[in-house]
Image (cartoon, rainbow, N blue to C red; front, side):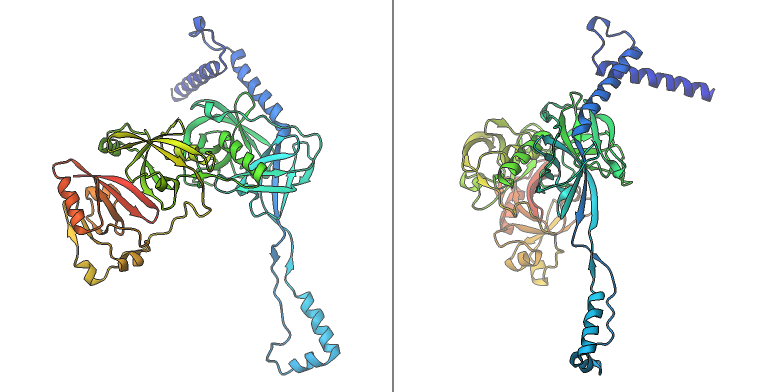
Length: 503
């Protein structure tokens, strides 16, 4: 009975898969949508995979990186130390001096090329331009490129953008075939995709899957808006293309989320729309010039949506305004919610970053914000992003003096706080411009702990009340009486963010 049940389940799985395949290739007519799929329908999808792979393969390359500066370890043995009684003999006698010189040369550490790693890439122009990941080629002295037909070349120009993990390299080779770039914004969850690359260095391989999610940010790079896919991606696939069923590149395979070190069903690809813009900057200018606002931002969560009376996922809330930035010049303030910029709707931090970075430096744009429940338009003139932008420091433990600990407040939020003095700010690693009260303890199991508040954080705002003294902190608590929750603007060394603490 077990075997029979298993066989029936297996048959149902085959039928279900066939139904999905039939829908994917669009063979069922509207008036015959209930008809069962046929072998021809399934074969049609196989033909699509086959044709996409056949057309793409000549444009996919394997990449091997080599470092010339690696030392081959060897022990240098000296016959006598500097304090040897025979030192004068070696320095003054020409025979021993020459022998000693030869001995030294033989024992010098030897340098030899070292293979750093392998990856993949794809030809985007018949002139020899190849797109890949920055992490595949960054730091290499020599980049070797092997075409699908076996020809080998050395890249003559390597241009990288570590922020987005996109790189463009060039080879001088005849008879190249380029692969077309698609539109990643048109990809939707459930769309079929193929991933091509050289996993584990075993040779070109094709895997298939679907788009599992969009706008992912796993914290790998500064600029992230990944497409997530379940098409198998493994070490060596990095830099290879993710293709739609028209054979167009819609992403660069970049990373995997894995507990085993290999394919676990979650892979990430840089959207080709982002990669196209980055590569264009690299080709034209040799570097990427990004515009920036000069703000810290966070998404509108469920709790924040209630506090600000706005839909979840609509806009991005400002948590910090940096000095001498476009945001500061436009008088943007902490707590403003950015709804639109340059005529485009804002749906979260990654979406806003994507809009901002491609704006023209020096040009003025209109931003629509929500401030205290009112819609306000601001004009911003964009500046170039500083190289040090987005660098964060690690948090330091809190060790206040006994004198400071006497000035504390234990309150209904189950927090203990004290004034942020200059001495304490220096000890915690905050700049002198930071103001507020510092959290010295959080009651275990409290709503404050559940909201993510920890010892050493700075409270800069309660509701709409700026906090720089204990009196202001207490005033903010008083204004929040009778409410089910308290809105706080808090800061650590990663930046500022809004949190909602339930009472």
